[in-house]
Length: 236
Image (cartoon, rainbow, N blue to C red):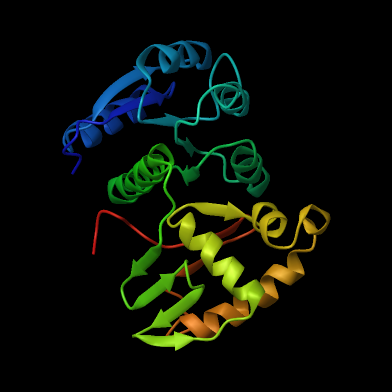
């Protein structure tokens, strides 16, 4: 539940979806500002300075991708895409243009709230200007200052690339990161098309970190898009 009354800007042209989200969010004490066009959404984003934006891609006046690009010219507000588009390319394009996350309709209220909590956590970290020294999720603990990873208090020995990957994913815990984003950050811009590197190292990481690598709890594959470290800051 949102105790702080965070403000959510909803840019969605489908009336039934707006009604559904209004009930779901207001019952959790979020405040909501709504609009059904991209142009008005940009105006309201500037006027209201929301804590997060829920954005449909299929708007009547402009494509949601354009809304993301324009917002990112001046704002770092978390943007969560809510769209019926299921094509991998649409998801990748939205994320690479600056969206923070992507939910495909239909989705559950619990999943949406978890994604909003993740976005809020990242915004608070951004605003504080501080980097986390340690990350903990159940039995997994990462000490960023010492570059050490522990599972059930036992140190797990990782290669430099494996460590870079788990550090990057946990520093963006809960958010999906595209193949391109991960390859660029870990291997460099010249390797952004070489997804085979990523698959090999993610398989190795799962065998070291997951209790059941075939059914991972933490390192989740988003098919055709990228990977997510599954994490909900509102729980546990």
